[in-house]
Length: 492
Image (cartoon, rainbow, N blue to C red; front, side, top):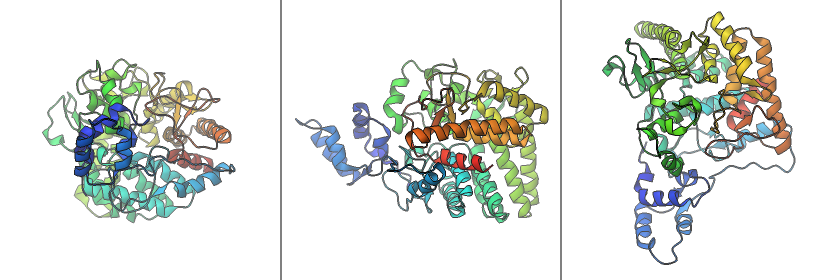
């Protein structure tokens, strides 16, 4: 796989384009495909840029292809919502059998989220798979798993999305959960042995550097507490503005702390870009400190990965590996209770690695230990009460209890956490709360669809008369994980 980030080759032109804001969305230029050799475009730009009457946008449009930069779905007649989604699966299907611009090649077709997102996204794809399962599209589910495996085998991990500028970070590790979903669909345990090596490679990525750690230190995605316990954090290897949000990052970096760009990028690895969850003062992005935080969701997902590796090892009669991953999972389960269970609030919270205590942020990632069956009955009951009292609104579950204008804060309800909330409550017998979560969000989705003919990236859970907003770009329609979670919830 060619990992050349061609944006680096046109850095002067790229910088000029992004700073001039010739496109409304900074992602446009990152997705552009050069129509001529980059060296020729650079030479032509250097020759012409200072000349009289030079128009930067005209130059870019003449040298780059922007076809398919944004997906917009229009129908003359509004279909029933389920029929609309069935058509969307085909309309959101893409192939990338060769690299084009920043787009990475993948061996199989895949589903993109929609709107401005015209590439394969990692954790989105799990929630898309939930809907594909309901739709009986098992082949596409297998394609998604195969694409993830290809990326893990060739890159070492599944990037945030299938573009070269995402090769410094991943997203929440859902690959082992994707295998569970396929097993649930066809009952074939071979899925675990088939991808055992892939599971091991993804685990090695998340644990890379653990052997070098001393107490109270961190390297990449692994941290060792002052007591010598291993935890994980989100991380990005680069400390530079994100190409897809280039000018935004540069402007936000004013009066920001050190490693601002890496903290920004590390939050992107979580999928929560952005939220008060990451801010030292709980309000302003300039105080972002993702690198100082070990997260309850990531560590819960890695527990599931360890459990899955123990299972695949057992199926392959690899007794030593089975014992190793069984012990790893048991140790992590204990660490999750030690570091993420906050006795004061009786809820799960992230852990601050420098302050050696739980962070104050109240957020919906507290659902993960219930979603994955890690919590005991008393913990589950307390979390369920928190969810009911602080997170459930008439339009669904919100992600935090703070309103900052960031898109992963109040008042927005995101599809993944409606499924996690529903499943978490069902796992522990809170059926009435599970149904309320399901019904509140599904009715909100149906209302917006009835009014607009669209399925959105996120929804306003408090004011069900409006559409959600906040963040670095407008709300997008399409929309992969909304389609998937809606179909799955309606089936249950």
